[in-house]
Image (tube, rainbow, N blue to C red):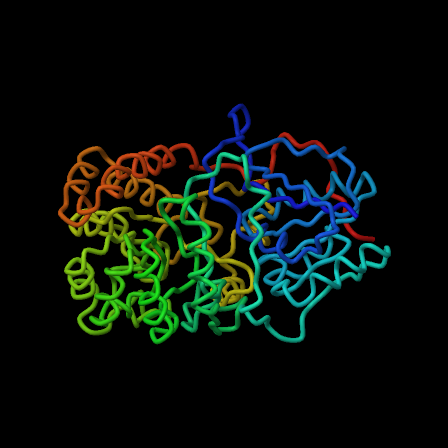
Length: 451
């Protein structure tokens, strides 16, 4: 049996070379490869980096789908299906919008794939694919295996992606993670992670732990970072800010090789944070205390913010950029609020009649950076422009030089050497990704739906 794995791109901009190297390895592909029986012939195509050979012989195509890649995924699926090749889809969007995804594939995996993938492959071998597969329970992460052989020879960023756990227990209104994992958090065994890092450390100088919230369980996180200190690797991750108030954790975090953490600040306004159901951000003295703690332990910060929430003031994005520069963040993101399907936010805005498109991710009028809903106090395009202005301010040359020579940011030679490269890439993307079309506007095919 021949299985083709596809990682779809977000979209295309007409007249611009879309195929780019130096993307991150798509970890969901490594998960599927690790689950696939060894007698299955695997091929893989990354739509972000190469043209897909639709006419190459294959018996089954598998496509993980996210909301931003859904439009392009359906185009790709239609190309294979018109050639008589069955398609199975999965991923976050398949669970968030199950009825929609089921229209464009012979079969859909809802939820996590580990406990059903063997059944999918066996059914495909015998030409008996079911319309849908859903495991009765969530998989034990102890058995998860990642097969990265398909990535060899491809020019991905030299950053190793590692999964230490899945899910988050916080109830943030806008977050799709809480919907997908139903506010649960599970973790892989520490020794399995340590073993994986020892195997990969010769290939990567930096690792990114892709967990939705590395600090979902501080007890587990402390055990893990203690073990990581013995492995001697550089790594970064994303975590909730409550962990920045635990001195014991921060001390061990620093010794373990952690170079920085991505933290969702989201807003500087306490009332807005409360409406997001993220008022835990204000605990124990709030941001200033948490950032002082991180600085004392020489941990760099990648701060993220969202704008367009009810209660946001017109200058919120500008204030966030100034705050991020003043605190010398290594990186920062200033994005508009996005209502993902299946989230409490999407449901609320839909009931209030404030969505501008029924399914913004499929609407030809929607482009990347557009607001797909009407904010309470501003026009949608005003929020978009203020986000862009905040990015321009943060990634200006003046800001970059000011932040680069901060004692924390320059403390480690590797991170200092790469500061301008990483910040320069973000600076370039301020313009190149604005109003980027979703899907391929030049695609002239017909979306094929299941009869």
